[in-house]
Image (cartoon, rainbow, N blue to C red; front, side, top):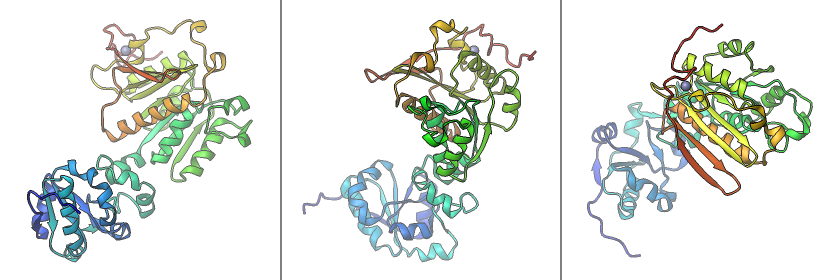
Length: 372
Ligand SMILES: [Zn+2]
């Protein structure tokens, strides 16, 4: 085997020096096997077992300062040498036995503080815990989050399933409809057995089967001027997800989003095309009415039942809505704010259009207008 010469050997640190670097720019890498890691590791450590490191080293080389540890220091030394050969530049090894950290009470179940996540939660959301941008704190945020999904149809189906799978703790589902055989071509929350059932109950059963830890609040009613305030007041919702199929209710939701300062993730579908916008309620951010000051005539805005929609298209837009919602809840990345993503499914093209707040927008230029 040809070895590339190493620039610097990995430095050997005692526990104190190792943890000091970890508190700064260093990223902790636990190279023990997964079962050792899950029994307890240093706070914030990512698990890259030595046995799999050769195929995954490239994931780590861009991380900057790497702090590698194992039980005795031997595996960490081998791992550090592999990382340096793979191109990592600043690698340090914990030279003292991990038992010292264990005695000092510094090892915790991965996912961090048991006060944040129980063992089953740490297992279920293990792929989230591997992402430093989520981790135990982020997962706790998701578990504590409350999202209102308006519509349990084509868009609401993937939205609700992915939010439930990701561990969003409370999901409100608003829909007054019953499952019809013609829905099942795209509405994957429901099944042939649930034909004729209220969609909210069918949705609750499916979500609970996927993740029993999610609290589902069904609102088996139309979202309209009479019901809106009561539904919105039921919980302190963190995000509204718009899977509605008509303009009147969408404007109603937009008003609520502006007035209550709750972000809204919008999507709509038309035959082979989908549109997605995130209305994060920041200072100066445009609202839905800034983009569409008035609803189009009904003849120009047919719903799915009238115009048709290709199956799988709602899955793409609804999954994107779920992704935007998770980003908002975790406060990571850049939401699709002031931008509209238009997806042309026939030619597989995403186009992004920018738009701004309208100075005289009826909905957002005069906040907190009293409602009549
Ligand atoms: Zn506006």
